Length: 322
Image 1: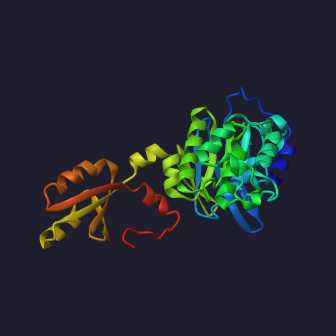
Image 2: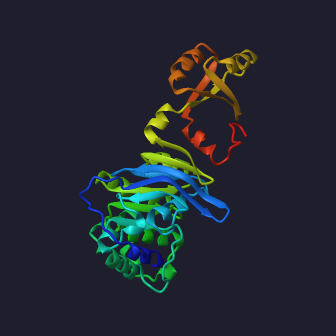
Image 3: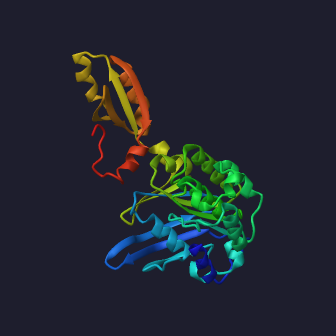
């Protein structure tokens, strides 16, 4: 409940009909004493976009979301939400346009799930039939909503938080680590929810530390590490242009073991189990495969190196085979 009172400090309701960028940050910086939590972050989140903030714990993701929502003030730089400063926009109608899921959920354990959702709905202008659809996607039973929240598991509380944030069908959803504690079925349900929202022209910004989740779900990703923007890219283009990891299993003869590590156009990385591993530029894969066809090879497997590239932001010393 404590998060929602911040919305009551906002003053101006932006015009929903204006074609304004939902979120824009310019050199956004936040310091806590001597510690630099966010360093000159500049990015845009456009309408209908599914945008991910990706990074390890402590990367600056939550700080970024709190700055966007106006919960904390920047040390330097600026942020606008639908063209307005977060701390200048206030009012009941503004709350209807935004849904927010904090990363540190805290609910009254004596309330039932249903009463809590009704409370949030009253603050955000009521709920639509979308609430029932959210429950179905996340597999939260109607009988569960009649239980006291104190009896909920962590996963059930996370589902309740997602429903509370989205039940009023907001134009902009800002979600901090939304899939934390969700089981695989509920995660898939969440993916369906946010994809459906974006198909309806809604905008979703969410943080995650899960690499494969960001690549599977997002249209655009900003990678943060130690408060700095390390990379910003459109996912489809990034995957298409990323180098490939080529796994080669050879016929166990000495001659083939000597030949294969010297493939032109391929950089030999090392061994993984019984496989030789190479990195190959996306445009050179076909030529390398033609070369392999002339050699005593038992099997070839190709994977995108996109995930491996992103992993380097988590473990800079990461190498294949280590």
